[in-house]
Amino acid sequence: SMPASQFSIANTPPNDATVTSYDRDHLRLYMRLIDANDAGATLEEVASALLGIDATQEPERARQVHDSHLFRARWMTEQGYRDLLRNGLPTA
Image (cartoon, rainbow, N blue to C red; front, side, top):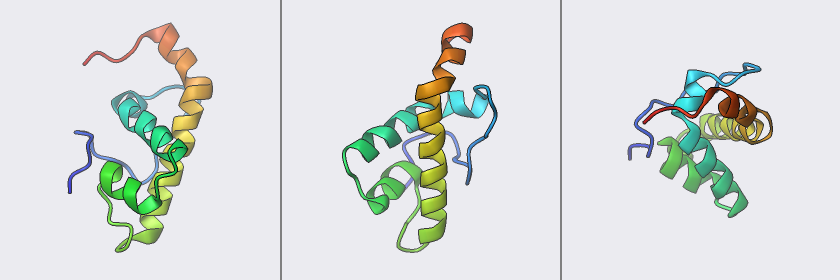
């Protein structure tokens, strides 16, 4: 199944100290990953629904993509949002 995002998902998101275009393109994904994690969804569920990865076929990749994006999502909520407030949200 295709991921909910129309943007392709990298194996690892950027690690920049500022918000990147990748972050802006994937804001919705980041929020969904945080929601899913807070709701206690399994890696298999999240990988399939949000990342378009079959975690039974590619468990290591599913874990890497999930964990790296969740880490970046948390960074966005703690740090990156300041950039967004300064520079504006992406236009649709």
